[in-house]
Length: 269
Ligand SMILES: [Zn+2]
Image (tube, rainbow, N blue to C red):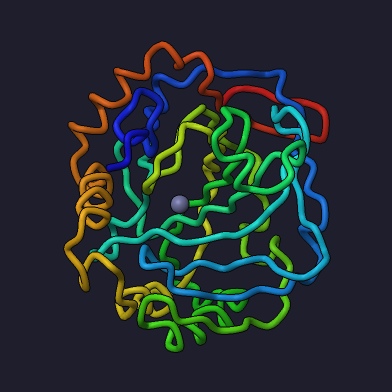
């Protein structure tokens, strides 16, 4: 059993904007090699689509209130069976069709395995999705096309080398910050979460591709699946999430919403 699941600092949470404490002192994020084309391998992790970052180019983040530099290792997507209920995090009880997580580990550790057990081990950037009626998001075309090759768990496909920032919104100045955990087993409480307010836009057609991917939940009913299902169910039950946030009241001061109007000035939204 996963003894770290169900502890106090578990993610995801429902981020109530009314409860958010503003921090005006957070410096801007610095993104290194987010504009460099990276070697990307798509796989079906059993939880969904996961893209591993391979090759020698290291993409990393610093600033944004993080202590130190965090190296990107992979990004993955969370989604539900309904097109409107797939995000892990809720923002003021609103859910979104999908959520992107870019996973980084603290560069002071040798590799992600060493970083994982430590409270400052990981930094995950979360982006929610919105369905847009302005057509396909061309930056997702290659990834969506390759989803057909990884319908079954453990399948992989090579993507065209792409820069991380092409998967992100054009600008994303607002974010929420809280200390939390991995959202799937083994649920280590080692994640500094940054959830951005600005969504990534994809077309309805692109969003529907996710429904064709098989995952372990449908194929197996082992212990792993049951734990994952319970965690995922938090998404669908706002009361559970609200309760969860109340338990997190001690850490409420760490939640922050930041609005960047110009390079050096911040204020509240
Ligand atoms: Zn995730």
